[in-house]
Length: 225
Figure 1 (cartoon, rainbow, N blue to C red):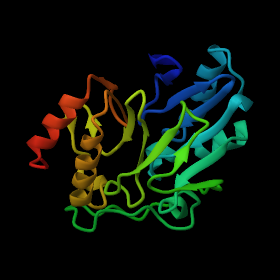
Figure 2 (figure 1 turned 120 degrees about the vertical axis):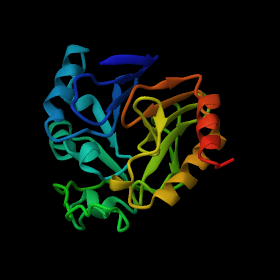
Figure 3 (figure 1 turned 90 degrees about the horizontal axis):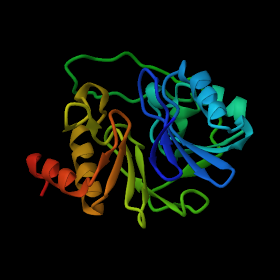
């Protein structure tokens, strides 16, 4: 586990998809779960840091793609944590519908269903999770998936942006191939730019500090401002 800010970490050595841990006293909240093979690595790093699996009380999912919910079933079974997913993406996370794909992509991805995991709490834009990090706000950021959400801590100005943007060789849009509605995703980029976050934690790539001006510059590059 690598420290980002006090009580905020990300897990190292995962092949794809960032997973974050927030500690609130003895309670731990995870954001996303990476791919299926990541579950044991996540628990091992928690153990090395001195935490037990049953201290993971919540798993917050930004969107139901396999590199974000791949080890969700494993981690829920191992920890007993409650699972939080957007109301729109719940049907995919629970395995009741396949993942939505971009109908206009040049390459058509075959329908893919997730290993279903029961969702305990369905989230919507504007919801508050008061137990986590002094209060996390749910920000609807659809486009990459129909029910993609971000999490926002306004006092610390920390944004868990997930896949609204990538941070790989600079800040970029997520690939159209894996984004169900790229135009809608650009609207979501414009929305998170208005938050003026100071720290942005991505689903792919390292966190960015002093982020507000960088996100604004990226939005301008996309002619969103």
